[in-house]
Image 1 (cartoon, rainbow over the protein chains, first blue to last red):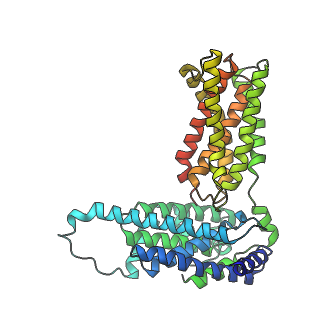
Image 2: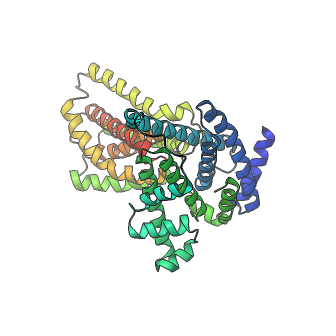
Image 3: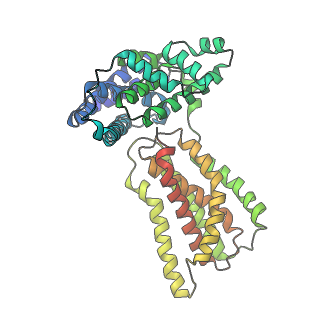
Length: 208
Length: 206
């Protein structure tokens, strides 16, 4: 345990000095630890590997966006564990809420409706597209360009004729609205698809 | 996206050391000091000139200054995701609770009516109004943190904001008896803290 602490501490220290390889190493180690912790917690509640991986990615994004809350010189283990615990509990609460919402809403029609076919990727795109339509024109353009087309912020700014700062603002607002819309949706599949797009997009863009 | 790809993208997004230093959140102590420096003139502008300071009023000022200091220390710990010591979570509210009991005891022995409803209603309105600015500024700093307990973080931010407002308003409060004023301010601060605890989970979720 001490060896891990020393190793992670050195990696994180180097990462904060700009060493990307060290950062990759510590993120990979954190992913592994999250997988073990979240896996055991979710296994008990009957969840699968996909949800575990969602939590792993949420944790990595949180570590990345909140890395300045780690105080250099303090142990990194408790800091990482606290983030893993927070995100896992948050996810379990989210899963539980969705499950309740779906059962509360659709229990009485379950017997008369045919079982849904397995969701195809095309359906997910369609549902995410429906959420996208709730965004403003600028937010929709920016979220589509960055999150779906994979454009860089600079390229998106050039294409839309706005500043990179304006792209960041529109993107963050759009993602927040998208996540909120997804949370309000009663379909677990849709929710997961939209949140997935939101969190992946958030992570894949420059967040500085 | 696969997790390995995400790790590579996050690593590619890592800025240099200087940029990371720039992202460091502002100190709660600094923000609280600036908030106090702005709230005192605001209180004077809204509620008239400063009253004559009596010995007991100085005690009130010292009490609120101490509360701000302890709550700021606790907030620094609560803004990080690591588990906070019990003292951090319950220390500042415990101080207020103890003060409340002492005030009730002193008031009964000294023949002063403490916790009068009209005093509380009067002070709660003003302290709540004056606490609004400090609450917003401190919340802005807290949102850049990662509190393991957003509710506790909200309560503590409310406590600091309320104590700043009470400190400022102690200089203007027309309630003549210092103990009666302090008791009304304590309830007002606790109400602001309760407000913070209520909205903390949605405000400081990360």
